Image (cartoon, rainbow, N blue to C red; front, side, top):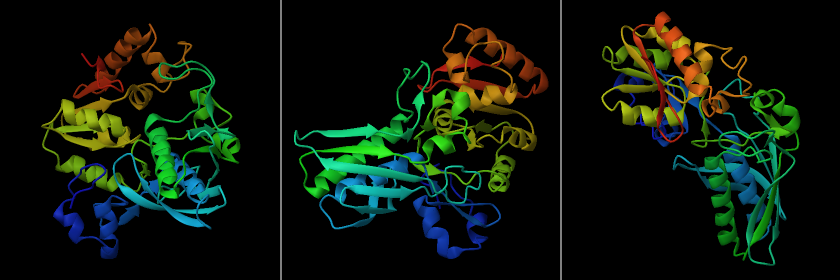
Length: 338
């Protein structure tokens, strides 16, 4: 059985040990994760998926009496049904965090309002509670809504589907998060230079039930990997490029659990991924004195080469058997251990 989200092939022993066989169909669909101990943990929906569902429901409710659920195609390609509550152009969707216990946006309400467009155009307007960038970054201009490209694509695609299904010529959809500014204070947004609301994100559209729950599965996969054949990565983009750069290795997504994952490695290993979590793991104070708000901003500054070289040298002195390869979002290697 293969996880359609990560492409990980579950060992037969894990499947045989499953404590909840009735949930295995959800594992096959990618809506849940099977661990080494046989427990099944639900994936949740990202803020991007929640936003897309609210927007589509608002559009559909212009043509239907009420809407209680909508179909969404996630950025990872999986189709899901998301519960909503929509009536006469206004829709609410509440974020389902699955079994991820530390999701501060769990249960957060997203509200979308839709109105027919007389011009026949389709417009999406981010409103109150959605953060914006307080300063220019390598990828975003000041004032740009904090909505990632995969999430925005999902939202726009869902609105277009709603327009077609409702038989409309066009629509304007306004999305708000009533408690967005309040909840954002519990996230990293203030430190990341995102102000006045939450970020709308979602590379796959699903939230992993990380924390300590998956430690057993991650450690088991590391232990099963051939000596020197494991690549540890921190996110979906890093996972993709790790597989391309190291096709003969076992690429394992560990999130922010790099310390524990390295502790489980017996022999040589490679860390590969985007600079943010990796540099912060190497040195939590890496941004001190740089004038940069984020590692991503640092990676686009003239200081990058000097700082990256210094941190990699210090890290390799502590972990001489660990190779580090840092890539940008386009897969280009921007720093590598000596």
